[in-house]
Length: 246
Image 1: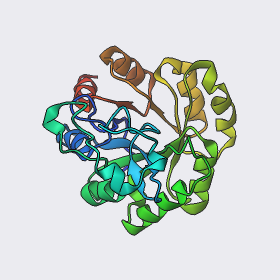
Image 2: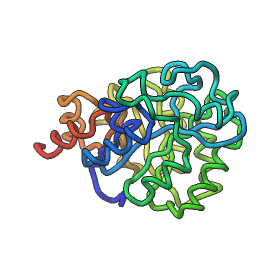
Image 3: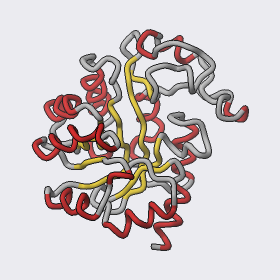
Image 4: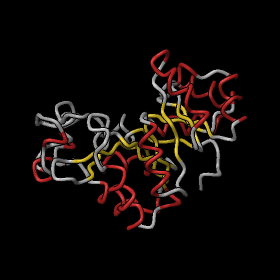
């Protein structure tokens, strides 16, 4: 399924229309026709893999505190939807198990390994166990800003493709420097760093280029013209309309 191109990833789900990283956002992405979703995983205090972007719950729930210091029961008690719109007040922080059980083989999934606040925790191992349990090896693309997360994923599930994220501008120089020397299948640069030369270099390494985060139609068209293999967007319905017109 990864052979098709370009691929539109719903960034944290259809996060323009529903609260990010929730089952509602992922369902909206599928309803809008997105072939792929992107989401972020980290561990709770009791070692459960949960889907949330920030290292705290402050921005996207009615609670406070660090994700890694709250148990799954405490995280599940939080309202993860009302901050976006009262219509989503019953949304909860999903577990990775719930996402896999709900969407499983219905969609491609970019799983960003975001243990950036606790880089040597067992997140990667626990994610790979769940992927194996649900037989989702052909549906998954790993990504992370941390190279060692991808190296660990390669050791545990070598058949699953991996993409290195790069920070924007000069902050991502070190990732762009080491990327060519890693065993990767994709690279994920910031939209503002992508040029024709960049696309050519990635493709010369026999890798796919997936760009984040792209919400402007003009940028979408530019990337398609440059030959990008896909991009992450908060509005997959818009992106699919642009793709249809390209």
